[in-house]
Image: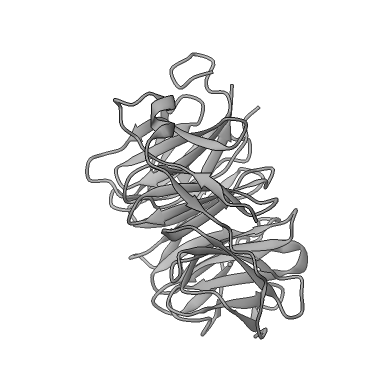
Length: 359
């Protein structure tokens, strides 16, 4: 794979976009040798004008949570570069972690861990539309495909909150799950919700109709997220203190096998178009591209030069976005050839991002 330039630019107000693109710079090569192993889981928005125009934005945007603000980063130069568009400022004591976009792309939902709320913003102009009081400690947030419900994983409350997105209100009592839930995922049909429970080493499976909970035990040490392949009834669990993924059968709620070859994985996302799993490997500063269609999966590694935390796909699944801890980078990767296209220093800490396209 040819080496490509991936420029790192600080979001300095004194720099013009052109000057900022020239500042800094690093080159990364995607390391793509397939590694067989024994078999054993950003928000982007595309909308019409600028952040201050009455019509709203036009283009593709990544919403990146950063403690007391959300950085809105625009994809420019025909999908090959990143530039800061705006920042959404939260309360000074906020710690925003989870972020999700509504299926129609019009709303961004930000889980504020310390304030115990979910903030709702208009993706076209950053206007705050609502504050949903939870009284919990939300970390992850996921939205059903019909856009009617959201679910938050509440880390210190060991629970999941259910939110009605038509009224922006919490529905019923919180649902108890395992200890310290982090990532939360919803099945395509909206019938099941999965939490990866960091301290208990389990996955909780919620039946959304009955609110009953099934526990899948001993998935690994410090699980962080369950990436779903709904068509095959599979879930891929990242275990941040192990060097393997745990594959679960989402029909029968049982462990099938392990996939080794990753290093302290945290974030993960499954591409339905490519049928590949993308995993943030904090242990070796790479993204693992896992071909899970094989009986013995193979892994290609993409070098980042930073410790990745979260991965998310654009709606067309042509771009992968990676947040890195420590240096606060957002990195964009072409999923066609695993080429690192660009990085932007949004600032530290950069937690999560999510992806959407607005007409």
